[in-house]
Length: 70
Image (cartoon, rainbow, N blue to C red; front, side):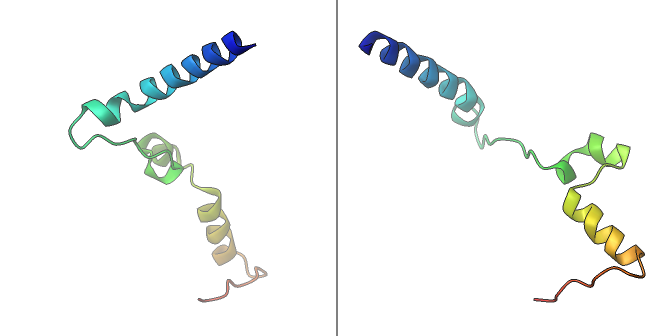
């Protein structure tokens, strides 16, 4: 039982280390953005975030409910 926990902990530690290699070893390293609107390939295909698509449809439709201003 203890051996399994040690092995699982070791596997998780190795996975985290591999995920952090870019951040740790590069100067000013950071994870790249995972948002759809930051991807050039998605923008070229015309794919937008669901929030942007919803906002776009609300402005096009005559019957759409207006968003509350903050």
